[in-house]
Image (cartoon, rainbow, N blue to C red; front, side, top):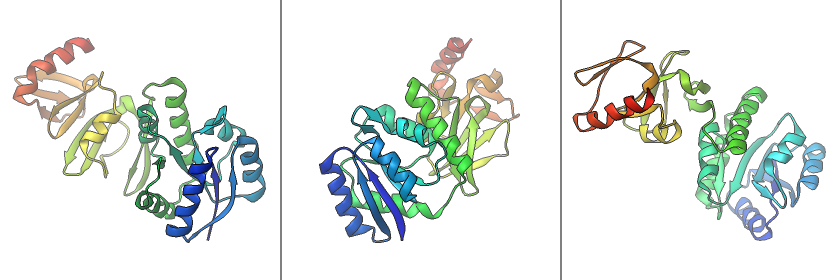
Length: 246
């Protein structure tokens, strides 16, 4: 059994989540439901949960206020939130699980099933740092976290040279690491990375404009010595993107 807390100040939301856990997630043992960060902090420190369902907004405080009080996180977190574009983007950058309200049972089961892949406290800290950075400043963080078959990787955005699509997978070529493949389509990486420096050269390639060595006759020569063709219909727009960058 996985000892679990629900932290949510909306009674109808916590009631629904309790019902879903009882019906669809019998492996979870609910310890307590908390409605404010003082009660939640005490419950975390005394009950030592393994999993916390954590609402973003808690009365006049936020989940981040609570986590900053706690310090080191020794439990899994699944955030729950109403839809807000910047909130969803923040979770994408940090690779932290979240559920949109009203919570659907199959998405709940999917999120819980991921708990078998444990990560270190240091990786949790890095993921939360990325989440906090975006949330505090509402801007693209300098780092993103991506999950691969070999674990979590944290990328400096400026170190990413290019991203190459292969069906629903994308291979990331970076200055600091060997090529890494993630189970995300290229359009998701395109949505995560800043449009000011990343450009979709054609259907299969997203390139970092700051890593271009030369552009000649429709071919981009990148800093990793790769050669990427710019789609004919995009060449005029690509020229404007290069001009805007300079």
